[in-house]
Amino acid sequence: MSNVITLAVPGISCGECRLVIGGAVAAVTGVSAAQVDLEARTVGIAYRASAALPRIVTAIEESGYQISGFEVANQPMRRAS
Image 1 (cartoon, rainbow, N blue to C red):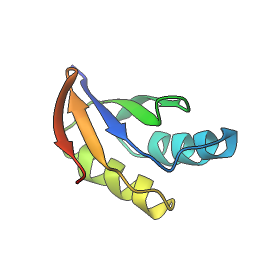
Image 2: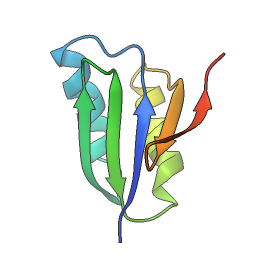
Image 3: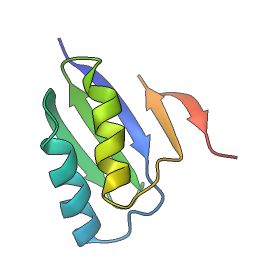
């Protein structure tokens, strides 16, 4: 069973961002799907093990992007101030 999370990444602005973030997230063990939405500036991720989530966040941040919030099942859980 997969967990699904949507991460708000305000620094997403172009196709290269999509490639960098998508590649970094896809390389994380346990990620089954990742979709970068340029317009919404979000990354939707399906992952199998909850232990993968910290690695997903680290992969995005090490790629040079910051996460400003996230949603689980379309419910906002955290927003940057």
